[in-house]
Length: 375
Image 1 (cartoon, rainbow, N blue to C red):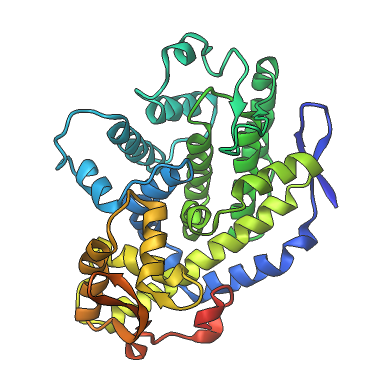
Image 2: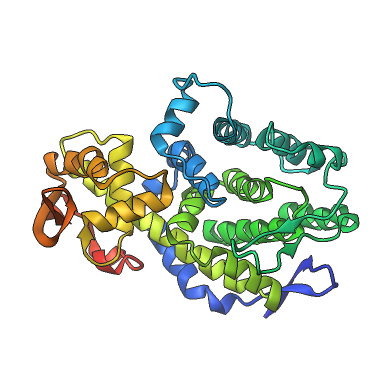
């Protein structure tokens, strides 16, 4: 066990036990070494656009669809300014900012936050913001249960000092043996920013975007995808943050974030093999559908797929989901109908159990560890 140069408000240091995640770290490092296409800035830029805009907002509970995001980013959606549109545009512009790779410091973080929070802060929040950080208390809700007491960001008088520690750790402590170490460091920064909670709102998105910023600067491109890991495998995200606060041990959070990003990178590896094996060009919606199918455990039931989709998006009927997302992949020969069940997915159509066409699943199964179903 060792102590990091980051402390809690009561003066206790943040602990780390590397042996708890050594196996996962080594597996990930080998996976990246064997799949160089993932370790490129082109890959990072591809996933940062619609997908990471969606998932960075999704962690906060906003169910935007990638097609909506594409329309807004490309300015095809001409509707009047709205909270939804502002959230999406802000993240897109924030990603443009970090892709220009400025140094991470107090002034540039202020610039990023002004981009991400533009038009989203209440009048009260604006009135109580100092030059850089909040001037009052903030409450953090980790549960929709109103009987559960909210957590609280650190006292506003401590923020400047704690953010100085944050920047010192970010810029001065050499943590690198390989790019997976840089990912680990980015997630320590992710947690510590959330712990400090330097603003009244948009703390989570700023924290995760700053961690992405750090990864870009360190050329740790595969790990940009971590937001998606939280949304698709993230039921324990808030719990593990609270566990770190309780036990003062960041190892819990690092292990969780290593596991979530491992499964997402394995999905990208499988998706790449599908794209190479089919003569058809996959649309952004095809890609999203395949991603969700790869995230499913057990049978690939259409009704179960619709349930997952509606958990992550504004609701659609199973019929619409089938006709616009599932059937196009069947027509392209990527999915096959294995059998039907006695239940109905919609009127006069029995629920279908799907499978991937084995001829397009041409990849090295020994390389898949977290997606047990596909190894």
